[in-house]
Length: 224
Image 1 (cartoon, rainbow, N blue to C red):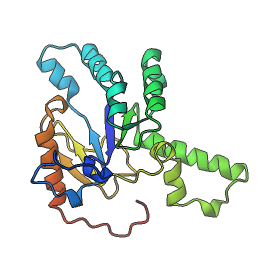
Image 2: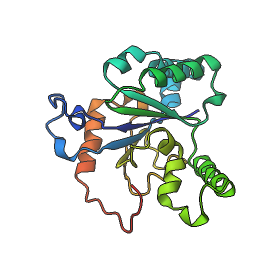
Image 3: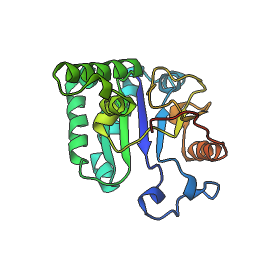
Image 4: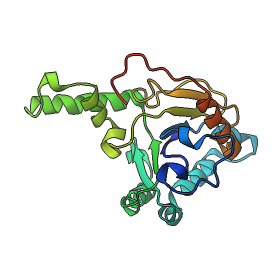
């Protein structure tokens, strides 16, 4: 099961806080508001070290969801999108608790995508719009990109988080793998060769520097 993440406001400067931790190579005025990450390579990393996949996934899950106190302390607002019904019930409860505990936080937003697929996300959004038309709550002519985006999982959970300006995928794979297909239409893509467990601050800094060195163009754009 893939675990992916979208991060809004990746550095404290976006929140009006100190920028003392910001690397000198990174321009604080040109930070992306929303960074998406495909955290690929966990299984390969574990296999190379003789760690069972189940043990590695359990450790990753615990690291993500068993540290609610640190999330609250740092002011992070936690959300989860995707089909979490397939997860063990204790883990579903931890996810629910983390979302509830951090709902009042006003800092960085962390959105974990678990059991998520871009195709199914678009299908469920279209079904939601069709139901509203069928119930007379919306006219067919009102179906547009804005209303569709609002009914995607990210729009439903974090309506104030726009599309990612930057996508980073680790492990050297160069594809989207059905991740946030609607949202990534105009995102800058950075592919990192290191496996996710080896991806650290230096690699993240390099991705931001590469992002800031690009000339972004959008063509005809109606959604952000």
